[in-house]
Structures are given as structure tokens and as C-alpha cells.
Image (cartoon, rainbow, N blue to C red):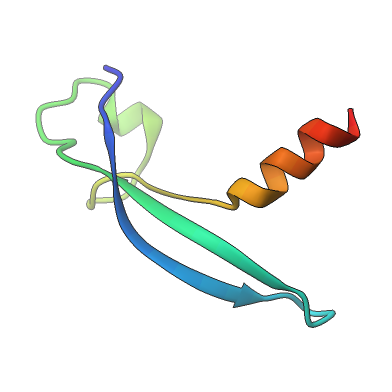
Amino acid sequence: MGQTLENISKYVRKTANGFEQKIDSYQAKNCIGYQLKSISHKSEANRTIEINHRLIKLKAKAK
């Protein structure tokens, strides 16, 4: 458990109101052999997540 995630791409996403967000995509290196894979996600590929780091900082500042 607790695999490290590798940064696979960075891109800019435009929202419906025209605001641009910088998104980082991360992917687990290897989910093969992980016993709880069938419970954690149904995809055949490795787990992938997308994070907007600026949004996280702004939300923390707003608290």
C-alpha cells in the first residue's frame, strides 16, 4: 500500500466561465499484484488522479 505517484502530464483546462486551471496528472507506477485493487477501483489501468495545486492553496487560505 501507499504507492508513490509519478507525474505523467501537465495541462491547462478551461472552465465554463473561461478561467484557466493548471492541472497535474499523476499515475501509480504499478497496481499489478495489489490485493485490494478490485475494491479500490475497477479500471484495468493503473490509478490516475488529477490535481489543481493552486486551488488547494486557495481553499486552505480561505479557511
